[in-house]
Image (cartoon, rainbow, N blue to C red; front, side, top):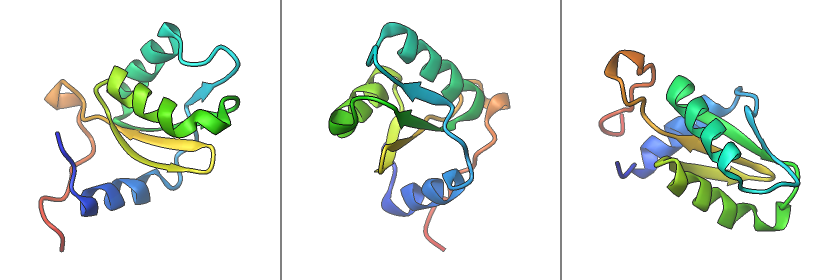
Length: 102
């Protein structure tokens, strides 16, 4: 799903008060971290990832993590990446994206 700019802005605003639920530390982008991120996305749709280590590589790692989890990278702000993926099961979806800018 390709998000439009206004949808990314909407999701960034929704993420403002979310605490990071995934921490990328010394072990880097491991299979376990990808699996944890995938599970968090399925349960929450919109998450934050905190870069504890690898701060100089956060842009590249954010894109790699988004690709590995089939998620959209919404934004990287400081040492935080915001990821979104609509829940695969329609009944578990709780974020409705605006269809057009209002």
